[in-house]
Image 1 (spheres, one colour):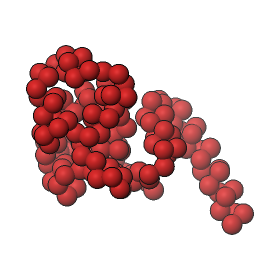
Image 2 (cartoon, one colour):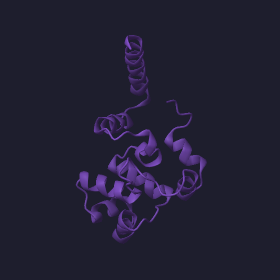
Image 3 (cartoon, one colour):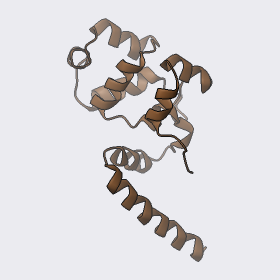
Length: 140
């Protein structure tokens, strides 16, 4: 599947996270578990061994505000969400394009690793994947 825009180009196109939520149909979910944005952030915060206090301080928000994001459905501003994604190393696709992510934990790990690559390495990886897909298609 080819995307015409990167996640951050998409974010720049809209004026707020709420506009993106509305454009993509309201409450964001991930996988078949219907996880909310707050569930995703909480999962990655705990996985990264941050306390609410530590992450809130690192982001520059109050603990109460982070609690509301994680547990009460509060939608953060673009700036806050960007910081959360970067600090917790959450692949933006998990949040913005949940239907593109399968339930496979392998897929999630691969996407996370790809999000850490620079453009040069991504181009190499794309070529390798293209070769593998072509080989697979020619044998089936």
